[in-house]
Length: 196
Image (cartoon, rainbow, N blue to C red):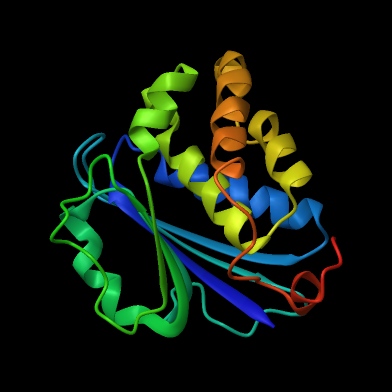
């Protein structure tokens, strides 16, 4: 079984950090991972996208997927390209602090969760960690990775010169994890009630 996750936003919103955090957590959980990043030439304000595939066995999907099981949308600017890729069994997490209310997936595109990620991240001490709040919320609803592995990824994904950000990033991940329970299980063992 494979789970394809699309992450989109604009440069500076932490899309690449969020994708890497989720990928590192999946590896720590013993899953297979494929990650592909795409971003515009601008440091801030250009598009930033990541394509992540997490699997229980050898991955057969290409790194840029044609359809997806999940999406994280941090900004509406580039979300239009995500909607056609969502399957009817998908889950989409939307940063409702920023994303235009008119920008939502079409009916029948699966479960949609709206999280005021920027507001929550600001409350925990870093607006820059909003994407991590959204990742935490996705994990809370899907258990695509374990909460422990996700929290542990906070320090592993940062370069040494940014290590001081690990503590607030962990708080942001935890704030997202605290937003709910599993409603859209990623794996059959989660659906059956066992934990990984």
